[in-house]
Image 1 (cartoon, rainbow, N blue to C red):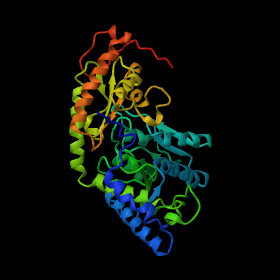
Image 2: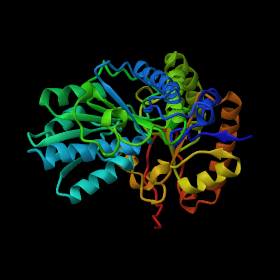
Image 3: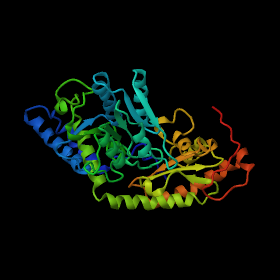
Image 4: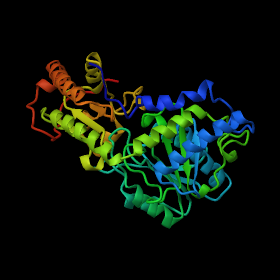
Length: 405
């Protein structure tokens, strides 16, 4: 049996989405900016997809949603253009973000620091989220932007976006959220929160890779990242990727239709898997269930290295990850776990299991069995684990694992 439980890294494209995209490669292939009938046919499909995205996010007609190549581009666009517009050509010099953002935010912030921008990296609290009051205390009259993710790719923790938005609005500071792990997984209503900019990516909700968007509240000014022709009203140049935009529209429509039902379906399977894995001694899961996206488990297993566990699961054809796939090249201790305060010895051992609406009960049963076997096997060969008495559920005890880099 093959079991894909790495849906926070990417998802399968829904076959219905592939079907919707198909005609726009070789049948309806005109450039939507062209004025002839080939262009108008594409333009019609483009308009429909745009409507699907607006409706799914409850964006207002005054807002702009601009298609990009991915959320990495959207994130770079906001940070770099706020730098150009409000720091280089304004009187601000400060950006606030969190320590647990996606590398697309953190690497861009590091680049901006090299250009002389002051960046504050807020740690998460013991619950694994950003405390709005702490955030508020770091805002100064020099702060140009606050960028905080809507939900964490690693833990699934949902951040207090409504409160953060209200603080930013009151302080007159721009607010960007990386919505990649929220859109299509939990309700995202852009009229219920105050967000200036939100990044999203289709491949996290069963759309194709290589297409994303940036939401811009009230169509406010933001210098383009890509200059060129007059595509997307001059906001983002480059011929529009019509088949992929059609796919993104279809995917977001499916994901957000009866979203509560879909969440309940996924959550039931996630909870069953989580309950079963927590029956193992010396394991704990990061973050309160109710404050997490319904599909995510980040579990720490004492005496078991994350990489070894992945290898074992992979041999059983179960796809999972340690923390985030986007940063797995460097075996540094997982920053999220360190922030939540699990003792350093456990920081390597987080295994992330992320489900989707395509996950079945049979797959969950199979995973529970294989996971338990793998833990037993790996603990059997772990000298450090053998030296201590196990403790039941949840408690973190000191142990003498050493880090080998």
